[in-house]
Amino acid sequence: MNILLINPSLNQQRIGHYNSHIEKMRGVHPSLGLLYIAATLEQDGHNIEVIDIDIEPSAQNKIRHWLCRFKPEILCIHVMTWTFRQANEIARLAKEISPCICVIAGGAAVTSAPEPVMRYSLFDYGVIGEGEKTITELTRTLSLNGDVSKIPGIIYRKNGQLISNGQRALIETLDSIPNPARHLVKLKHYSDALSREGACATMITSRGCPYSCIYCDRRNRMGNKWRSFSNHRIIAEMRELKNRYGIKEIMFFDDEFITDRRRTIEFCHLLIKEKLKIIWECRSRVDQVNRELLKIMKNAGCYRIRFGFESGDDKILRILKKGITVAQSLKCAEMVKESGIEIFGYFLFGCPGETEKTLQETIQLIFRIEPDFAVLSKVILIPGSELFEWAVSQKLIAPDYWERFIKGEITNAAPSLSSQELPEQRIDEIIRETNKRFYLRPQFLMRKLAKIKNITQLIKQTQLAGALLNY
Image (tube, rainbow, N blue to C red; front, side, top):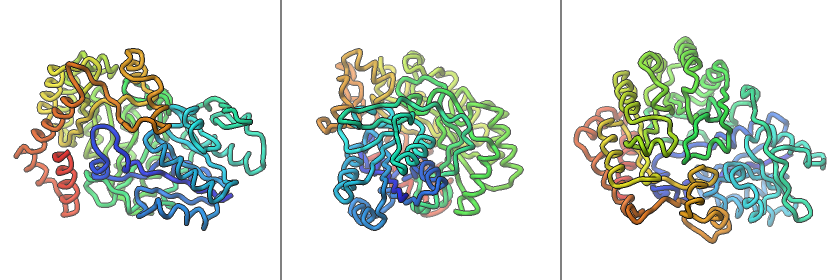
């Protein structure tokens, strides 16, 4: 069958503290989830095309042309809560052109709120959770006009009623999934403002998160059981990225790259032995690193680690169920700096229990750590997160908030916590002031200039800094 996959534009949406212009300045990355689905379907014998609206000039205007030219029997759309309306408009256009087309939606929105997403859309099927096995079984069944009632992991309509078959069990052996179908997108059109090399790519080496941070919804989507691709599979994918696409830098997008230290050490030794000469960055927790591990990672090409420091107040960290302390954050930063690896820090403002005092403690932590880059964000009440449910229980947000957002009755895609003591406007003001204090320091500017490798990198980082400071 001809199957068209579309990734709506996330960069056209306003999410969180920063506007769409700033989000786009940070960079545009491919939807690896959608490309895993594309690879799975292609492996199963289907003809596949992928449209990523963020990298296709005037893509919205060209979708009609693509639908008429390719004539897909199935349209798969990656749907996030923030892109729901755009995705539904694409489904409407597809059914206008081809009334018999089957529209399948997958992604975070479908997993977090399957019934509202289906109720207020033109999607025929929703895929809940990991999609590779589900999409294979569903497309095979549809091609034979078979019975979908026994397929786990889907929600669909029958006789005017929504029927959910429940969530499918997690994929235990990730090596059974083919590499993302990067050949179906224009890889060179993706970029990141903070990359060192012009040719960079993203990868995922594991799924699932065993931690319980209340502001995050990832446990809902990928489960709390951490699962990993084998190191040999990871190295093979890196080799393919270098040899086939000329990639020199990789950003590992795992929620937590160092969950298994033994795996990480083995990976680094294999990478050194392979002599791929690829630099890379990853995300980790402050309580996962030690000096020995950092030294090995540095030798294997790691040049930056992203940490969620979040708050400078231990009480706030406990409320967030972060499982770390301020002392651990400071110790982590000390060790990482000694290793010569860059620190990229995430900090949250407006947490439950937040006061002017705790915010000032977070600001003090930022300047004590002195990360190479710092992202300051307001806490967002994300659907599917424990924090959203807590806010509902405290009557700080309506239980049907995201359902009303999907329906189009609400336009604020970034609801945050606000109180009489600490209103949202004050949080915005503090973030703006802190960004200026942090990024306009002469010593910071001199360090950044010393590390700039080329004019393109200078332009990108200057544009991002300007957008941040002029927010």
